Amino acid sequence: MSVKIAPSILSADFAKLGAEIRAVETAGADWIHVDVMDGHFVPNLTIGPAVVGALRPHCQTVLDVHLMIDPVDPYLEAFAKAGADIITIHAEAGYHLDRSLQVIRALGKKAGISFNPATPEDALAYVLDKVDLVLVMSVNPGFGGQSFIASQLDKIARIKKMIGRRKIDLEVDGGVTPTNAGAIAKAGANVLVAGSAVFSRPSIAGRSSGEDHVVAAYAANIKALRAAAKTKK
Image (cartoon, rainbow, N blue to C red; front, side, top):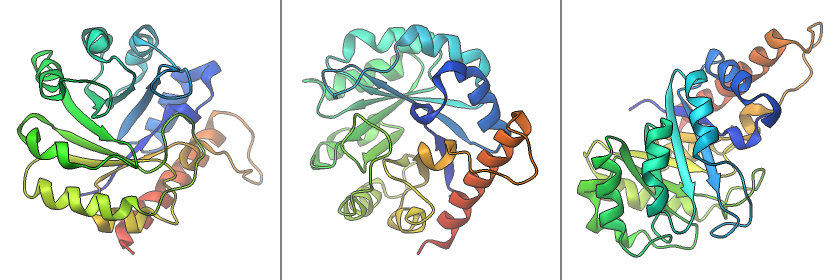
């Protein structure tokens, strides 16, 4: 299974999110990852379903929406209607995980379950037949730019073993860079979420700071992540 790169718009320029999504898709992104934070479940506020709905026309690939909110059930329908393709909820953010995953699928969306770094993955065993994606948080959620927590490599490997041959994507979010992408892929992940590692714009000699420069910078970053993931070292 080839590794997909899912840039997180948490690290994009919020003043022009539509343009940023178009640029990163042109640069080779497989999915677009949207981090939704409520200032309660995690210590930060980001965006809601209205913004996701506004972004949907700009996104031609998979819109991967990660709900870091509690309670989550009252908002599932709104994010589904906004155009999310995948809706991922946290195992820690609800009392009735099985029911919530059923609701997501009943809304016609793929269902994902996420685990914070210190949360055991045990609950996954009881809902494997109801998930399309498992997201391992490799930083404590709430802010971008954090360093990868190395202990999550073992968790990724354990979850990969639980998934077996099932058609379930294994996604990792937090501190993903070309330095660790190989190890993450080797552990079993096939979707890498990257924020600052994709949306950084190093100076490119002889080029302007216009759209071509931005796409070239993002393309170089995505290429580096993809190449590193293929090495599986």
